[in-house]
Length: 168
Image 1 (cartoon, rainbow, N blue to C red):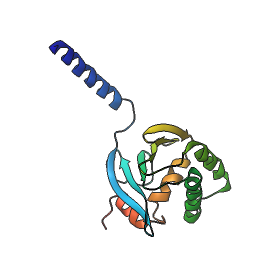
Image 2: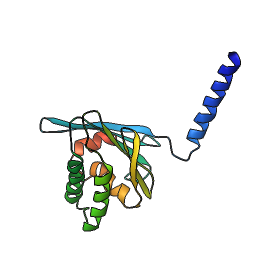
Image 3: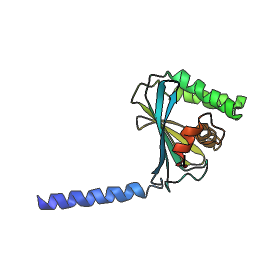
């Protein structure tokens, strides 16, 4: 019995070492914010980087949104397009990305999460409730998508300040 416990502990240690040696940086929380529009709570958001500090819109970073209401997949994609337009970042060629997001993203209900994992500059992975649902393999995409929340020109500067850990 004691020998089994030691073997299991050793196995657990080797699995932990493998996970951290996989090349993916360990992420630390930078900040959290809730987006509310008028009297509706839309989502809670969290930003993570390897250092736990915001050092600009650059990989690696993770942005997790936990939804607080029902939103159709089409609405999520349309909101992405709208935000890019408001930021002056939208280009007609981005429709290919939006089509990919439409195929990838599900509709959400309260408690569901969608996470952007932009660990590699050329690849943006998306997770739904912590399960990989797809990726966009274009070096330009990650920065444009993260800019919706992290750009100084964002529509929601209070959310940005809280996400990046800036003083109020």
